[in-house]
Image (cartoon, rainbow, N blue to C red):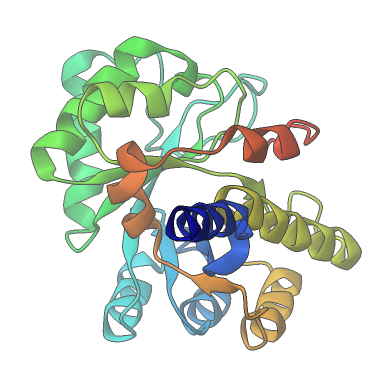
Length: 264
C-alpha cells in the first residue's frame, strides 16, 4: 500500500512540474535581408541560432549569403508575394501574385530558390492576399516538398491557409507568433520581445520575426547576450521538423487566448 501511494505521489509531482522545467524554445528569424549590407551583416552577426531570411534578388543578397554561410547561420528564401495593399503600392518585381499563371509561377519560384541554393526553407514576404488562396499555396508546397524545404508562414493575415496547405503536403511548417518591430518604437520592441517570451513559456516554443532596423538590432544584440535562463534559442528549421509531433496543451492555449493578432 505504501509503495502504491509513493508511486501515486511521484506521478502527481510529475504532472505538477511547471511547463518551464525545461528551457522554452525561441526561434528568431530576421526578414528582409539583402537591401542594406551593413545592417544585414549585423543581423547575421547576432549571437546564437538565428535564421536569416533573404530576399532572393536584392542588391546585396549574394554577399550577405556568403557571410551567413561562413557564420553558420540557417538561411531561408524570403519570397515576395502579393499583399492586400493598394494596387498602386510599390511591390517587389519578383512577387508571386494571384494573376501569375501556373507556368510563370513555377518559373519565378524556381529562379528564387536557385538564387539561394543553400536555403533550407522559405517564408512569405508580405503575401496577405496570396496566402489566403489554396491554389497558389498548393503549387508552392508541391515545389517545397520536392526540394525538401520547410515553410515558415509569416502570418501577414489571420486568414492565411499557407501552413495548413503545407502540412497537407507533408511540408514541415511553422508559423510566426510575434513580430518584434511592427511598431519600431524601442518601448514597443521591448514589449514585443517580452510577449514572445511569454508565448514560448506558455506553449514551449515561439517564433519571433524581426527586421534589420538599427533599433531592432540594437535591442537584439543586448538581449541575446543575456537571455533568461529558462529560454533557449533554436533554429526555426528544428521547430518546423517537429511541428506535426508537437501538441499544445489546452491550458497553454487558454493562456494565449487573450493575445490579439499582430499583423505585419
